[in-house]
Length: 328
Image: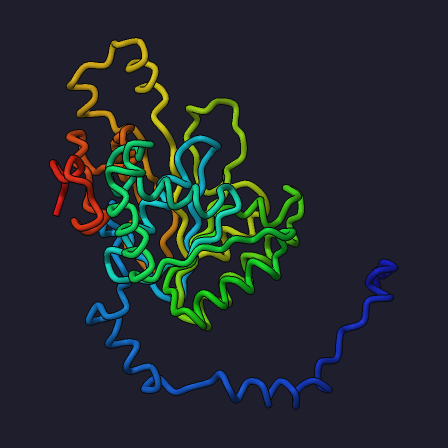
């Protein structure tokens, strides 16, 4: 007979039998026969649970009860992209809540106004287009846009609480949080990151809301390096928890050619300004690359090299010089 190690001699099997009764009680509330799920099954088949398609590529959808993470390096356009997505969701009749810890609510609105107009609002517009600016604010209000104006210390509980109020009391179907590292301050606070994302997932499921989290990727050896889900900063557990992961990367090689005036029209057509990588979509069939072209005047992402600006605002909120060349 072989000698047992100390750990084998001291480690006794755990007796779970005293907990059986309590387990049985809680388990009765979660076990169902298959026909209980008839309606959601038909919902999937009929497309009722397909979610709201992303305007950049309809193969990506934002479904109730899910969490999407938008990740990329600093300066790659994460906040611009999600601000445009928020405008697209409002235009689709979805109420939206925004918690931005990168910008004030006024700055967030200014950026969204710029994207909606397709150009920078100027001092001249404050007088000449005062009514258009007021129409923009009225449209956002009536469409169901809410903005958090947190002035106290940012905490996990506070951000989750605002998300609950936006969804439960105001009916928001989408809540944007920009960004995770402003909520969980320490990059190595893996427990805090996991708890926050877990809280977002629970709110999304229980309140049938879609939560969008903006996050960073780790700094690699070069800004040109390809990024994937393993580059997401912090705990690997947060990527496991979320439903969808969208990575964004600027085409820096193309930008350098443009700065050097060496970019040809053919290269502009063939090479996108930015690439979205749909790296995870739990309940969707598509994962892959989505090319985007950037219109600098409006800070808007477009789906073709022609950079036709999408219609993000109703016509009554647009100045006359912003109407031409827009997709309907």
